Length: 234
Image (cartoon, rainbow, N blue to C red; front, side, top):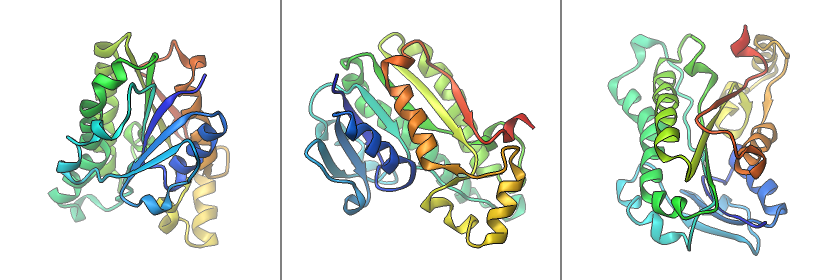
């Protein structure tokens, strides 16, 4: 059955890979991000400009979506890796705004339409760094840690109308991670850190997100799925 799914992002990386999967299933997709020129196009795809760093965009979000929402995916994130003594309070604020506050504001804006959807499912993205101590990750780990704690409470409070789950990847080959994979030495080093000896693919994260949006995951909520090449297990 076709679903009405909103993707915050969708122009690149995991979001774009997810659009390709969901589009082949005949869903109606609404993509909201800063650069609509990057959005995939198709008869069932609608694009709207939207910026999670612009507070004035949130109150207008629900008016952009027509009718009930069956699925919502929030893909914006940051990779802000610095030594602790180099981080400023503005770094923490920015990472919280993009990864956590933006997600919360989107949920507040669309909660009524999610409640009227068909067993609505929400999917967001955490990071392996939220649970595994890693140097230079204190700002992003704090933001994603806040997100993981929030999701547990949201899942219980909004049940049974809305399900919510997170995917926590390790390093994945996306445009956002390009600066960490600029040469063969960096790529090989990243592979070696993971027990499965490779880097994640955007399509793998997208497949998991598609599963969590589906009826096959109808008894799953409040969970964090660590798709990280075995890194969090070590």
